[in-house]
Length: 198
Length: 255
Image 1: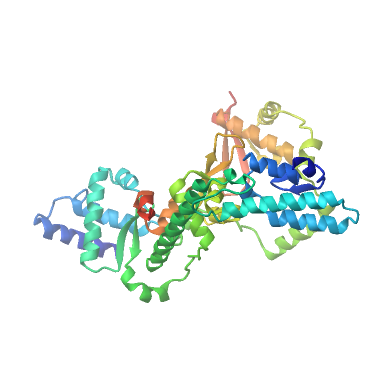
Image 2: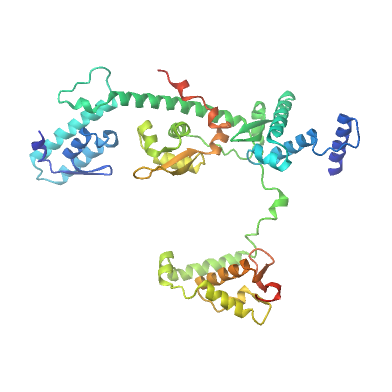
């Protein structure tokens, strides 16, 4: 198996370059192979910085190769796609075949989010860092248990204390929150003014 | 008006507020207490229980409470349902109700409600994407210590019966700290370890601690060994996780 893949790589090298002895290592194709492999084995979004550090190539180059891979997968209707979520890159299955894949998924740990949780998340994501009182002011009801549930689910976290009397705890959203929404940063959420009808 | 309220001697005890109800009204009027925070239904229910339990409630207490409670109710209902336009109440309480703030709050909430719908859409859309289910690869599994090493049904049984039997000796953490004066310092222990190594090259941790009964003394001994290791007096040998520890003189001699 190992031999086979090596032969394939060598052949590919010969074919694309026409010269047999050129070193495959550090070539663009080699970097592409590496990045694909890294994305394949990683259990969480991989940051550009990490890939660039390990492969010793500038982040711009890594980013370019990832974009090329991303396009390649879409153009070839591959079973997986690359997405930039939670400040990193990650392989996901192609959403077009989710119905088929469902029967192969062993554990789907996505849980339902209650209306209270969703509202609280909405407030935290736009107003962070935010205190519980500030959340309660907008929602008009106390939110302590909702906040605790969201912390348990890893969607928000404590981000220190406010420097005012009482030193209330302040909260902000986590990278996991971005991951679960499939967005890369809070900037990907629509502007608050888009929702203002006044 | 206030003088008649003074007769109202009933004290409200509520997590947000404690005191007579007329004080609550004064604080609400002066905007020191947010009427939003006060659950009036609880206050009233408590008062009803209070008059049920007491037979000789003064009429003034009753009427005073009734009056203030109704004023508070009116204020609260106005704050919850702000009517647009004129806000002039008969007794001048309208200045309490800043409709602008309320309207802004309500609209802010509406915005976040819409956003929460959007967040839910994103969250639902994510259900179409799956990530690879990746357990730890086998060649990395070896890096984990075997937490179940030497554990058998018999050993668990022995441990459990020991714990159940020793229940009366149970120590609480604080008691343990306060009742156990620390008998020696790490420096003293370092000297003891050095002495033990003066005429030999190796010693095991087990040997070093065989006369130490209390856990705290064993911990001090362990810390002293770490300190000696840090200062390159000794080398520490341990062949496997949770295995026995052998202490070896560094370069065969102690500096």
